[in-house]
Length: 508
Image (cartoon, rainbow, N blue to C red; front, side):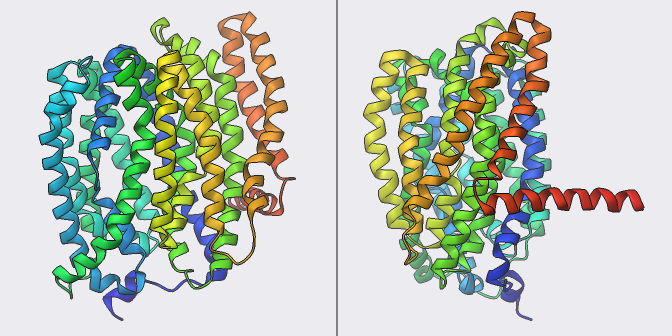
C-alpha cells in the first residue's frame, strides 16, 4: 500500500455525518475539560492582573493578528482541499509555509515602531517585548503544517485530542504560574508560544508524512494561488474577530480593552469547545464530498442544527448566570465587565455557526466567496464598532459586535448552501430562529429566578450557578429535540450510547 493511501483513506459518504460527530466528540471532550479549566484559570489570573494589564496582554495579541497578513497554517487548509494529491504537494506545501512564516515574522518586527505610535496608551516596553515574542510563532507554526494536515486527512482524532488536551493544559498552568509570579501581561502571551512549540514537536513525531516527493517551485506557486485567496479571507476573518479590541484600544484605551478582553475570553470558551472543533473535523470530510454537493450541504445543515440546539442554550445560560458568577469569583475591579459578558454571550449564540461554515466554504474551494463575505463584513463593522466604542466603550462595542454577527452568521450559512441545486434559505434561517424562539421566554423566566435568589446573598448565587443554571440548560436542550428530527436523533443517539457504555462497564 502506498504512503498516500494511508493518509487518504476512503470513507463511505453515507457515514460521514457519523464520523464527523464522533470526531467532534473526541476533540470536544478534551476541549471541554481544557476550556472549563481555562475559564477557571482566567478568573484566577484576573485576580492577579488589573484590567489595564489584562488589556495590554489581549491588546498585543490582537495587534499581532492584525500584522499577520498571511498565516502558515492556512497552507494546510489548501493542502487538505487536494486530498488525492497530498503526497505530491506536501513537500512544496511545507516549503511554502516556512517561507510565509519567516516573512510574517519579519513584518511583525518591522511594524513595531508604527504600532507604538498608534497605541500610545499602552506601555512601550511591554508592547515591544510582547510583539517580539509573538513574532516567533508563525515560524513555529510552519513546521507542523504538513504533519497536522496529514493527521486531519487520516481522521486521527484520538491522537489530536490527546495532544491538544495535554499541551493546552500545560499552557494554562504556565499562565497561572506566571501570573502568580508577577508576569503581568506576559502571562497571557508567552504560554501561547510554548503551546505552539510543543504541538509542533509532538505532531511532527507522530504524523505519517510522505517523503517520496520533493519541494518544487512550480507546485509551491500553484498552492500559493489558492493560498492567497484563502489566506486573505482568513486574515480578514482574524481581523474581524480581533477588531473590537483593536478599535477599543485605539479609541478608549487599555482599561476598556481589559474589561472586554476578559468578558470575551470567558464567554467564548463553551462555543469554542463545540463549534471550532466540529469545524476542524468537518473540513476534510466535506472535501471528500466535492462531487456530491447535495449530500455535502445536507450534512452541513444537520451539523449546524445540532450545534444550534446545544450552543444557543449554553450562551443564554452564560448571560443569565453572569451576575452571580462575577459576584462570587471576581473582585470589585471586574464588576463593570458583567453587562459586557452578557452581551458577548448572546453574540456567541450567532457566532457558533462560523467555524463549520468557513470549513464548508474551504472544502468547496469557494475561497473567493469566503473573501467577499468577510471583506464586506469588515467594511461594515469598522465604522459601527468605532461608533460603539466612542459611545459606551467596551459595552458599546459589544452591542455593535452582536448586531453585526446576528446578520453575518445566518448569511454565511446560506452562502454555504448555494453549492446545492436545491434552495435552502429557510433552512439556513431556521437554524437561528427556532432556538431563539425557545430560549428567549424560557431563560427570561430563569433570569427572574436568579434575581430573586440573589436576595439570599452568597448562598443564593451558589444555588443559581449549580442548580438553576444546569436545569435551565438541560431543559432547553431537551425542548430542542422537538424542533427537528436531526436534533432529536442526535441527542437520543448520544443518550442511548452513553447508557449502553454505562451498562457495559457495570457488567465487567
